[in-house]
Length: 128
Figure 1 (tube, rainbow, N blue to C red):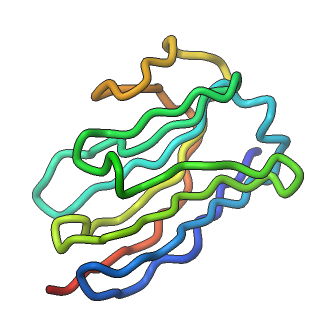
Figure 2 (figure 1 turned 90 degrees about the horizontal axis):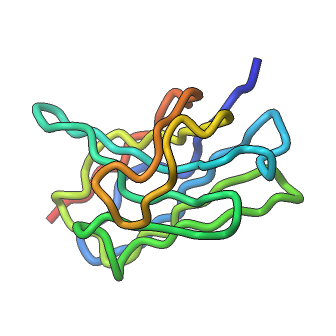
């Protein structure tokens, strides 16, 4: 069973930075797509960034220019660098992976990938 474990969440003031990590118990180079999905109380789930097996990446409009997704295949780890954080970025952030290419990757789309593995999430809180 594949396990995804997020870390790096916490509290930060608006304008600050934070880096989330997702360590995976499998070879991440074999996943078709990996990404970060967030959900705030009372709001819809939002896919904020995705990384496709060929190296393509995508970011949602709400985070473009502020967040950057990357991966280290040697460490089987996915990252989300978050800069210039805003209070509206407050949410639970989940790492997710698609091992079977459930849908074709669409960079910057509202739904970039479809995931069949999920982590437990890490809370990010941004205060004004």
